[in-house]
Image (cartoon, rainbow, N blue to C red; front, side, top):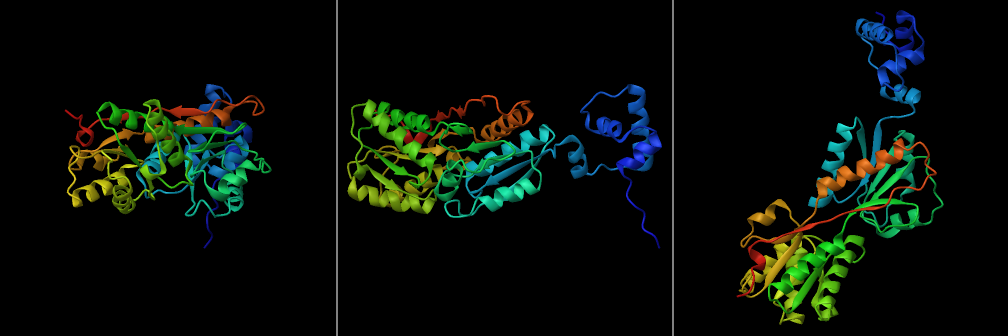
Length: 344
């Protein structure tokens, strides 16, 4: 029994009595084709049951319509929702995503991941992992020029590189200033991991808001967690021992804030009467804690969409040697709920 060979673009071109490039232009829309010729080609495509091979089409159009995404931390709210935004924007723009996950951004080798994406002929890469460890060093070296554009998420801005991020420093300033304006005087911080750029920016915003109010920020006012509720709980216990006069707390993400609120309850501290708490992220659970959690809302879905938009602008640029677009920061907003109620 013989197996029927798949129909190729050459078969379509012969049957329609046109060139292969004409068939390609009809299918991709890269160049205009006369209406009569276009209709003729489409009729042959339907009659033969031709299904264009994506890779073959890419060889003709020099575009695979695929974006490479390198991500980590999808167990957390922010990165997972950012990926949703990327998928939404890419799909609406006719692109698919090729996802590579890095489980330990500080130590995993970067070059094999990038090489694999290039082998899959992606049109561009969104580097959506924290700026920590070896991955930062690899890019900073500047010794690895790529033939395709790259957009970075959650990274410090560097000359010649395009990045998209949330303004973490400003968000932390919003949170801390809100606590000060609510009558709080002794504001502690549960920070994220010190190796994360975003965590450092949030700590910077906390300190700058205190400084603007004429208050000192001291090491004893700070404990560090790993973004998990468990670490927030333990950090709160430790913070109360070293900073017992604390009457307010800014926590660098909502999951740690929920852990801190649990610890406060176990110590018979009332929120917000004894201590006010503000988180960062606005995860869905923040509106259902008791009391409801005041937090800084990130536009994480919009961040993913913006990353794809920025990358496609680079891909579509006719001259990649031109001055590249400015780095973009999305502004977060403060969502005030019961956990930081103003003192009377």
